[in-house]
Length: 191
Length: 191
DNA sequence: CAGATTGTCTAGCACTGCTAGAATCGGAGC
DNA sequence: GCTCCGATTCTAGCAGTGCTAGACAATCTG
Image (tube, each protein chain N blue to C red):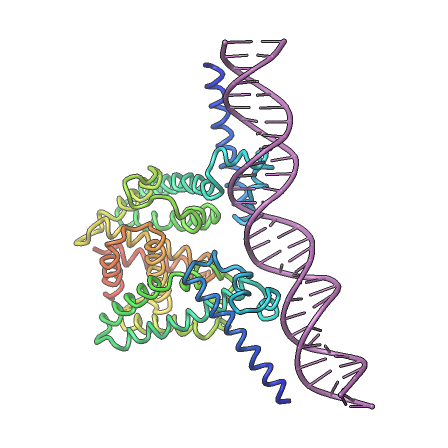
């Protein structure tokens, strides 16, 4: 009885090790460097052990992505609650979102470019994921005016996502980032 | 002398064959199915021939991407010139952009997700690429108001790109696509 | 027709994600 | 304390990837 709980504890500890090793490696050298062999060496086990925890490499990346969504949600919440009024809140949230993507490129990649099999706009989406969206919505709700908040949030989120995505792949002039962000916020800040 | 021109002609014909085979394969089965071996078989040559035309698989994908940018530019131009006023032009361009991404997912992928090493916001960017951007700008210029057109175009383009990207990876509710597009156009259509 | 040069192919490298079957380790019963 | 059994972990290998060196064949030149 006691041995079983211990083993389960050790097992879940190892699972966390896998996820954090994947994340660390990805943030240090990019996702291309995250191979199952490197990962196995990092946790000091052999390759097949990974597959007793996750269905495959994609599932590991999805786990990293969920971690990222949780952190994004708290970052957005902090930015929103720290702001004075609705307009400042929207600007702060946008700023925080862009800073998150810029500061953790590999993590953002796992969340939006790589893991495609995470359930998103459905009730069975991971909680961390719905939390992040809820934060955005809370920031937009006061400024919705005649627009449906859900729809407005989706659109604003898309715009933000597009900005940081094109930004990072070098498709936009690097130095005007702040001004584009401000422009976007202005366009969505007036009901 | 004449033989040399003939060989050069044949050579460039084969190069076009490679690019169009890559595109066809990608659109039919996705980029994962486009392997150098499949590609070689498709053009009925051996694998190393590909490398006498392109530096690697990435360069082939980049060539496909440039093709895509040219087609996107003409699609946007058609939509813009067919519209009555500035507002209708913006809506039409946005519609055409979304339709392009939706109808040619693999092509859009090559343009924005895969080929990262194309020069973008610089003078030495491919002409097709600058043309597409110029079309967007032409649609936005009349509605810029106090905003700098260049900046506004970049921001609107990003927003569009984000919409179609999240849309396609199943991160947005599928059926509200049109309404989100309309919302975006409304937010950018009023100076 | 011989020789040099181009072009193309065969074979192989180092790597990927993933898995079958062998080996090893831990706890249970005598 | 010792054997046995089951779960766990490992070694070895598969089929595939992008890419390349060196052997081969075809072509043009003198």
